[in-house]
View 1 (cartoon, rainbow, N blue to C red):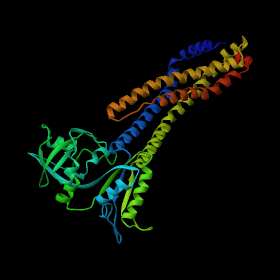
View 2: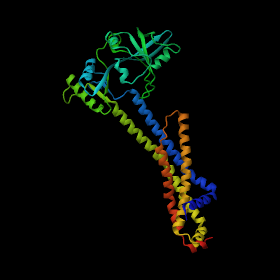
View 3: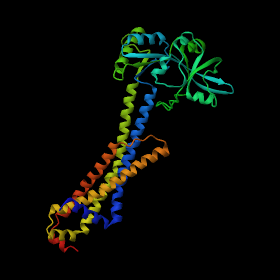
View 4: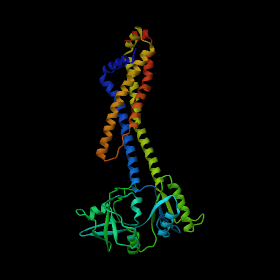
Length: 406
């Protein structure tokens, strides 16, 4: 018997019990749709985290002022005040795997323009800050190195500050009050949105020269943070070690002594986030695939019932010349058709469900071709696996006993 004939007979057999066939396929439909939707949600979430981390900058390393412990009291990061602008210059000129660096001094102030005011983060830094962070400008540009050297009162506004201080006006060139000091706006930053770190708003900031911050606002001569950019992602690990070795020498830290700084590699954070995302995606897919298993058991159950109901039909076929292989192939094909139709219907529902989740929940989803192919292959494989035993049982029936069956 040719394949087309087997397929045609399988279709007729399933049409005889439309409701039963539809209910049997339901388990496969739900399973495939759930797998596709869950994998799409998991991959979308992973991509969103990677995008948020990428928004922090490219190949970045953070050198943080260290912690200090007095007795049983630990004062946390930024307690040690030994990190300086000279350290940043040494890193920039003596570490070959670093191509750019900038210091950061941070504070929080109330800013005022006209009748509007807003409490925001003030970051004192250098012009290289913007290129290291891959931060584009909506208008204007960064302050210059000369303005840093002269400790000028110039600033760049983040998008959140612009929205709150200048809801209907162009801020470029205007003067705002930061604390008790006037600052001229030389640029506005393009929005970056929330960071991957506890949903912190990256756009809620004002950037000024670090010298202005140190001399006129905080009165400190040390820096809280240095950001450095490695020449490549692959070189970031080497850069981390080279920076550590250099600061050990500069700060006269002997072996066994506690560091007064910490070096954090953004690549390590990205790798950890990616690994966590993959694990979560696999977990979601594993949970959803339980539905496929239930659907496969449903197919086996219905096919066993079908073998019992069609025992006399099987006997007649064998009596007119059908072989055991023909009977086995026939019932196996019926199981595969059930799972294949269920699988393709599940794909449509899974893709549609993913889009619906993205629209209603405002989540990022990524429906990959690989997840669809895996779902199709698994649905057909389930039809073969769970249809084999009923098909074998049908093929091994004694023709004479089958003909006597009522």
